Length: 111
Length: 121
Image (cartoon, rainbow over all chains, first blue to last red; front, side, top):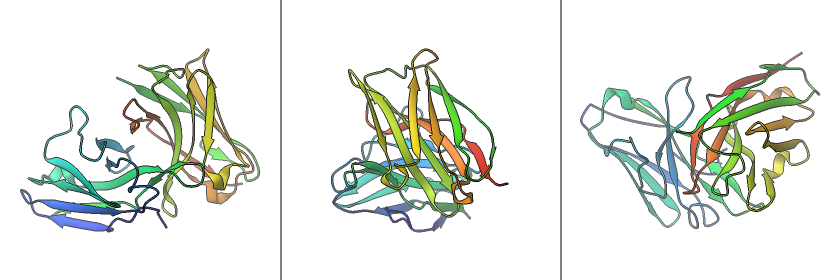
């Protein structure tokens, strides 16, 4: 059972917009910045979003993030076939001496 | 560009110690702006942060509470790398283990390729 809650799956057709939610609590999302990662099969996670809504260099602007209260979301606009992957949210949690926590992951399928 | 190269055995027997090393290029393990993490991933547990080491005028470590009695993360400044030791492993410790950097933004930004470690006799 992951500390952050994500829907297990999401889907869309090419060109559509897909949104993934991430729900936490006051000790994690409520206090700290949210990050998002994309994981292709057999690969390590790749950093997509940091500080709630900032994109590292090289990440397409089709990916955007937002945060409100104890929830965050990742949006993929103009969905492409190569966006089919697992997506994870992550943030620091201030409880239990502090530790990183992750969502359970959302599998995005491009129909 | 930061690169993290992992090494270590892929098979460990129950009750023994899991040992992995992560060699850093493009940054320094002694950087005052970075932290060096170990994270694992399994179908049953998902992504699980294990702990970190970092330098801020002196060395600090932080570990997930559930593993605190079994885990050690150490920096090696002479080789610019850091290591993970997990004692008394059981089959539940079977997972893909990743080393990763937390950069100046605080985010976990660069990851190693991962090492599948299987605990089995």
